[in-house]
Amino acid sequence: MKKHLKMRTILLFIGLFPLVVALVLSTAVSVSKITDEMKAETKDILDIYTDSLATYFGADWSNTTAIEVTDSDYEYIDSAKEKDVEMTIFKAYPDGSVTRYISSIKDEAGKRAFGTTADEKITSDVYGSGKTVIKEGVTIYNKSYTVCYKPLNDENGKRVGMVFAGKPDENISAAVSSLMDQLIIVALLIIVVFAVGVIFASNYVTKPLQKVCDATGRLAEAKISDEIEIRSKLKETSEIIESSKKLRDSLNKIVNDIKKSSVSLKEIVLENKTLCTDVASGADVIDTVVNELSNTACSLEDTISTINGQVIGIGNNIESVVSSVNALNESSRLMNEISENSSKDLSDVYEASLRSVESATNISEHMSKLNEAIVRVTAATDMISGIANKTRLLSLNASIEAARAGESGKGFAVVADEIGTLAANSAESVKQINEIVEDIVSLSAESSQVIGEIGGIIKSEQEKVMATRESFKLLKEQVDLSVTQITSISRDTESLNAAKTTVVSAVSDLSAIAEENAASCQECSASVTNIAATINHVKDKTNDIDEAADVLEKYIQIFN
Image: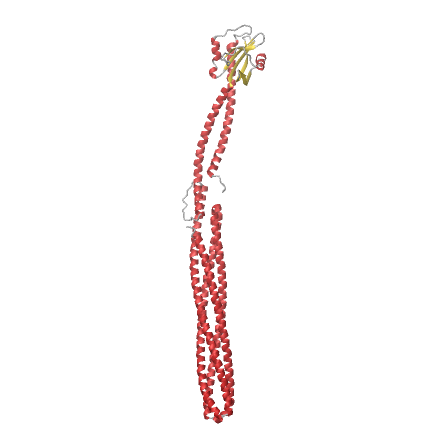
């Protein structure tokens, strides 16, 4: 991980660097200036000493006579030693030589310098030209001096020698070094005091910021219940603290809303599961009723086939009446029995049709309940869709707040993106549920239409059965009448043939109706099976939503 500079370090650098640079520059300038001033002062002092020396010795000196040097002269020459100043009198001789005559300078053996000469150039300038020479770095007895040479004149103004005053350069350097050490110590003290002040000020700035960073880190770790108790008198820091508090409050509100939505989603999913179970149970009941109705239709078809055979037998009996009166009596008896059986069978058919009507009514009621359940499912999916939209909106707000948080909000941004994905998945599942519900509504409408057609067919069957019963009553009357009125058989044979034709046609119609009824029942059973499959699919999708809600709840539980 890349290391970052601490703000305290930066503040120390910003505070101390200009100060150090300023102190270094000011110290260097001061040392340079003081050094120049000390050198100038040294030169002024040497100038004064040479003037005093020339005044003291000038009147008594001559280049032609020997001068007696007294102790007082040496005391005077040595009097400047306490100021680190060496003084010398150079005497000029007739042969043109200029040598040291009296000097406070001693050689390596500790003897006073006597009879030695100065630098030729200096001697030429001073003694020869009468100039004053003030110079640095002049070596005398292997020691560097700042010197001042002036011509020595007698009372008549005649040049009789030179005077010298010099100060060792090492003494000047030592004084400069001592002064520099003092300046450096003062500078270091200033730096230390200023550093303490900068550290105190940096702590005043960085400690609240560090606490804000720690609080933001806790937010990134989903610890949003921790209070942010930070204070600062700096405006900018206070604004950062207030922003962190607002971020924490916003995250708390978002998480609480998502938690509430998650609980509501779980409740809706549970209710949706219950509705799916109820609808599936209703579909099973409808399937059972439709199967019973199909069985009844098959039984009706068998009964009508039996009736058809019996009617054919009646026709044959009528034809036999024409050929034989005796056979007619026997046939009349048989017809009477057959008529009674047919009436009984028709009664059974009629009762079966009544049961069919009742079953169709039950199916219609179950379809109504199914439609009501579908309406509740639609309401539930609308609620889930609203929750998904709200969750997606909350996810967007969380992403915005995470983006505002910058680097500290990245961990929370990932969680916000995951919540958005879950909301999108919930919306997609709701869309699929709505499509399934539309399919159920369509199939329910088709089933209701089929059931209505079944009811109409059954009513038509009842009317035809009633007509058949009336025909059999008429047939029975005719049979009874044929027993007593055999002579009218010939006249009634045509009527019987016509009645036979009607009955055969009616029975054929009943047979066709029975076949259509059986086919409709099979179609209705297939539709109910499709409805049950669709309900099971809706239940599976509801389970998917439940799993998504569990995942959402798991992510929300990260926040405390």
